[in-house]
Image 1: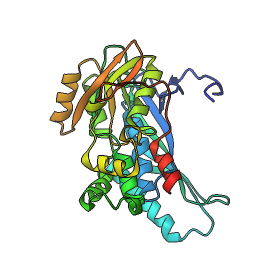
Image 2: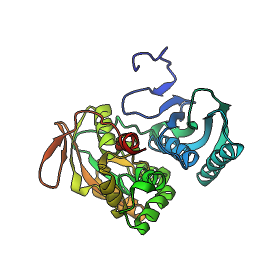
Image 3: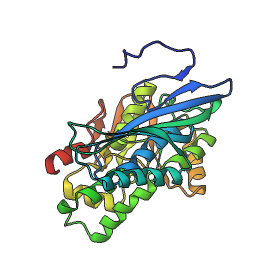
Image 4: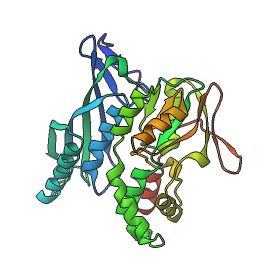
Length: 316
């Protein structure tokens, strides 16, 4: 697919590449337009909210200010008008929370689909000298993760798979459902750019481990990461234990993976802005290794399938 990209345009500043989730096109000598698109295919509830946050996070991870979204909404035949109203209300509320405009899109009742499908395109702007991509990391860069792993996955599982989570205390399920309010990384991305981030990535499919692999692949680097340093909240651990899910490979919107030259300074700046952060490892010029608490070194040589897809197939 990456070899079938049409005509290369001189205006394109950031092109399609593995691990790079958005493109940038020059507007003038100083500014770029940043664009991205993503579907929501796994959440039964809150898909409109998630769709807005996912694309705005991709824009922010490029150093861009999100400006607007365009929504393509496909519904199965026989859909109730209330279901359409609910999804569009979620999109409106999420867009308002980020001060972005719904610029347009397309809504259709489509034969052949069994559930609603939301595909969102995001549009942002960035100064050309502040563009950051997942391909900018270099050996020796510190790796910093904001908030915690698997916030989005925990929210989805706690919301959509309650029937399988009877062993999880109700207060932890309520906490996980509340992670929906923490899924934006727009604030921390602004801070990270100001503090000199060399690369940023929004961990979505395959979670933090997937984001590490994608950043390393885009940057042609290795990494060494201490799994014990990756923040995982109690509610996430309880939900993942109940379902047999690896939280480090579970969809993780709400966290931001940052490469930078000075890890302590990055963490200090983020924490000063009220954003929890942990230094989890470093980029290297060697292999890609996840070090487990028992000392086992796990090579990360491919992009794994997200745990959410697996568990939905098994128990959905």
